[in-house]
Image: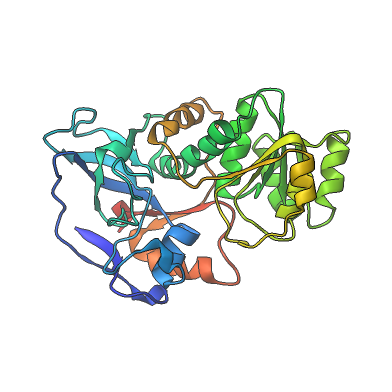
Length: 334
């Protein structure tokens, strides 16, 4: 098979597209013909660069934490999947560790994955969409409902409205009956939140976030603040937007990670702050259901051949950056 890998940390040029042995399934494994895998800013680009040694990746390494495709072989103890099934791989592995980090990932024509972190993909959901949803849907679901305890009738402030975790969070919160305030740093990115169903949008590049949210909520504040950026100038204001007994949930810090927090606000309003980047594989299933029913849209920037991965890594690291949504690599295109 062809695979994209790096033998040492460094710039995008350390990525090589080369022949590797086809994987053989262990007793509890699936071998998947990959049709889509995304390029993640931290879990692919930063790891390849060597900027995040705490992830513990040791080259040679095949990146790719979220492949989707068709099962072509199964281990002899696998009972939940069969050859020909459409599946996606989620991040957290059943025996610990993260797929594509503590093991080789899905930037390849064939990917080996534990069946316990795989989920079936409904026929109505394309592989590119499935990859975006399987990567971010379970994390968003975990933050909103398991940690954030979001309920119908409550109000949620979601930062990073046009980002992958933000865009899915907007749609899941809205589908659950919450009022959603989507915020971003530009008018164009805030407009993405409106297109995805947010009840209100805030461009905090032009207006003060706290003033805008308090105006929208009649001075009450929001029940839930959902962030995955940790922008030190904006995240602290998001905390100030919380009502009494409000909750903040977070799963990312690429815009920080150090954020000033007014702890008078935290203890006077009895605010809970909870972070968790992990996910539960089965939480992808209600997200796939929502996508199949037209209630959840995956935001995708472009789909390119796997062989173009170095260029896509370079794009994410450039001043220009990618557009709105996820970059998808498709090994079936070359």
